[in-house]
Length: 238
Length: 113
Image 1: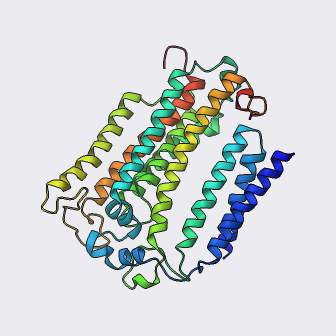
Image 2: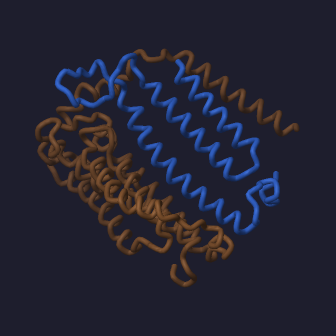
Image 3: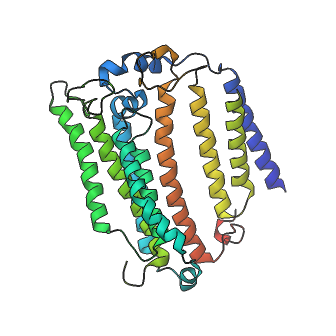
């Protein structure tokens, strides 16, 4: 009882403090100075029509590299936890419901379209709302659909690792090449900017987003594989 | 203003689930609610009245009509981190369930304070 009261008081203090802080901040009025600068100068500095993309990949590209590493750390953590764990118990395996006919046929029809849509999203990341993270997640959800509808199938893990490593390497190498250019800054946009709103524009940003798309897709597919393998995989097949 | 209220409501609901519920899955749902509320809060801080998305997809769009791109970029980062963190947490929950055969944190004695 006392514990719940303490919790309630604690929550009330936090909510009250935050509400007081944001009451002093006018809603829907002006932008911050940095955002204003990015909006006004983003096009000629990065060449990307989507200013969010130019913030994520160009102005704060180093942040994104850190984010991709966090993602890698989480995927590796899931893999390590399940590698150390014992094989999934028998009753877990028997509780798994069998997918019915509609799910099987439907997923087989939908899966290529999910791949296509994910690819579209991460290729057009510098033009439309979207990008590598979203596209990669969509592709991984397609793999999740396959796992759910065909419980026997598995993605080849070595292929996933190679894909993930190559994608990460592309990102880091593009960044390091920026150090060799006369500007000598990490992740400098050394390719020509091109024409605004065209598919081939904005220099290295689309390449980075494609790399991120592959990396996120393979990492999330790896997580899905680890989790499903706990129940589905036979012993010794891990 | 409704966005602020909604995001605080989400955060409060999530906080309630985290501190009061004893089922681990419900605690994870609460954590996810908190992060959704925080994301909504960050997005609504950058909102400009009648603003459009910060994408120069048409000719006539001016920078003055657009919302702030930085909160959106930060939220883009946060969503991905949320997803991966949730996957890691679910892995922990699976292992905890295998070890203790329960999801109730009141029955997991070594977590009691």
